[in-house]
Length: 408
Image (cartoon, rainbow, N blue to C red; front, side, top):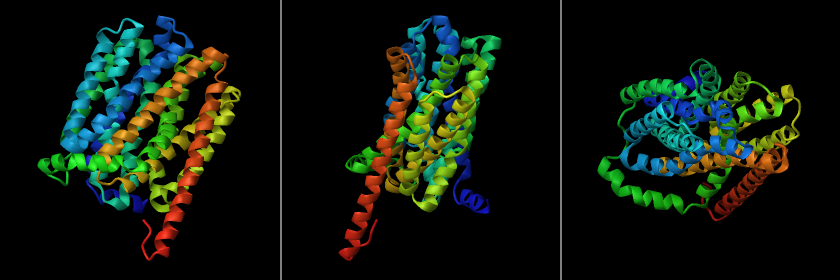
């Protein structure tokens, strides 16, 4: 514990706190439609495919915006971009509160709430720039643990909806967004190691250099599996627990909150362990565990076992999220905003695909089993890619040593 406290003191902790708060509250807003999905789908009488699309659209909006927001954070600074995102979240929530009287309008609200999902590309660059390289994994893991906003959304939103209706819950969510805007302004320094002119002139060169690296695209793939699995299931689990096991709105939200809590709390430890053991070694175990647990869930066991295994699966995914971004900060320290945006976008897109195919395959096959087994196969593919990457790294290290160079 002393080592963790010492690590936190090595950087600018108010900026880290502001980054965490931004992502925490934004994550609540991002998954708000998922938390209210049972009430919305009942009102509009949706098919399984439409249910999947309902909760997936905010994830798509976040994926599309993360690239732009990440690059903009590198160029203009994450503080200014973070404030702009909070403004967009407020507009989306206002729309959901005062109108959104049709399925298409709710999809529009969800797409605009993608701005909340793009918070990731602000929070992680802030955390990265606030701390030295030796503690990047821990700092970024703490900032990204703001995905515990899913826990708050899934636990409180269904309860509030039963008291005031789902439209009013959007209105209530405006209050924490407004408070976050104030605190974010006070806590976060308008930083940056480079001046605005230097950032502008170096931006294109750093972006082009990062995009030439094959590891950028590999990291996009593995994060699409870890974070895509976490956020996709966080959005879809209320529907899954309700449809598969017949539980009520509040119970489905509570079960989902428990799953999200496991994945959120463990994320900083993923970065911390990766700092000490190496990200690739840890990822190899993460993906194998994901594949096995998800394959068992695909057998659709009875509710107590299904809930327990889902909590375990979400914990493994959350741990893996922290590990992936330790690798990102190690390989792209100068382009962390752009890298966070691009890789985060891949994670959001993975989250969009997961509930979409779970709903679609449920309509086609009549069971959720096929959707979970497909995800297990993707996790196995990610495990294989990590194994191959480790072998390639060892070969490169031996080649460098054999020629008198030094491994990287």
